[in-house]
Image (cartoon, rainbow, N blue to C red; front, top):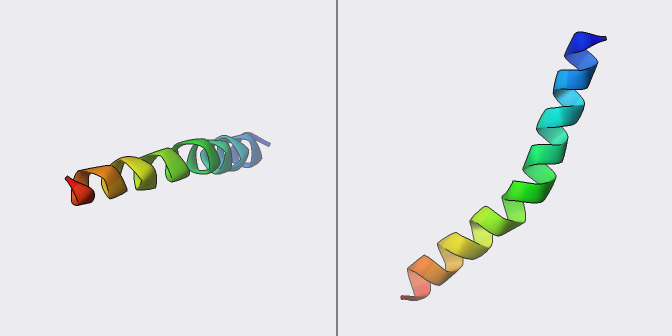
Amino acid sequence: MLLNDLFLALAFVVTVIGPVFILMRGHAAKD
């Protein structure tokens, strides 16, 4: 159960932070 919760939390973080991180990297590369 704990491992499942950890996996869900990790998936949530990747889903939320992933696009933002890529977007920030894109802006940094453009600059």
